[in-house]
Image 1 (cartoon, rainbow, N blue to C red):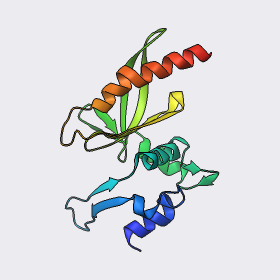
Image 2 (cartoon, rainbow, N blue to C red):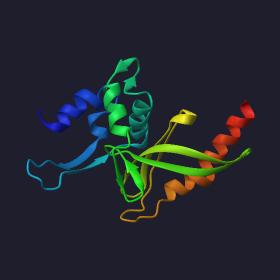
Image 3 (tube, helix red, strand yellow):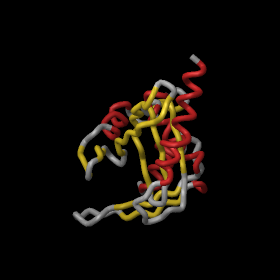
Image 4 (cartoon, helix red, strand yellow):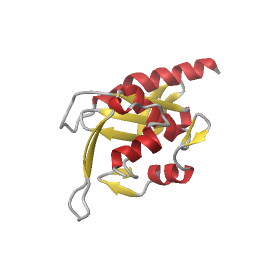
Length: 162
């Protein structure tokens, strides 16, 4: 079965992601040559993938991907530069200003070129999707937005509701 058909049947379909909402440029190789993919999803569909992983592979009461695969793919399997890395998931943390002082917030992040990000913040039961157009750059405005705007606001709101 071709990869796009398999992905639609086993992943995108169960998440309610329509075939016409996915653009996927991929190269598969049986040699040791580079294998890569450029997957284009709408932000709402990126969010579905994030929620699926945050819920340990469960979507709407159905186990779409195994709990074990979610754990393994988001685990710290290697280090690239100074960051831990799983299967396409990076481990990052931010020091975020909070009412009780600075708080370290650990995240697992899927990242794409240009600032496309899916942030999983398990300690806050939070999934955030940010998109951008900062292509071929090492600077990440999305991470700055998380550190300076979204997480501080979320932490202050969480503290106020307690």
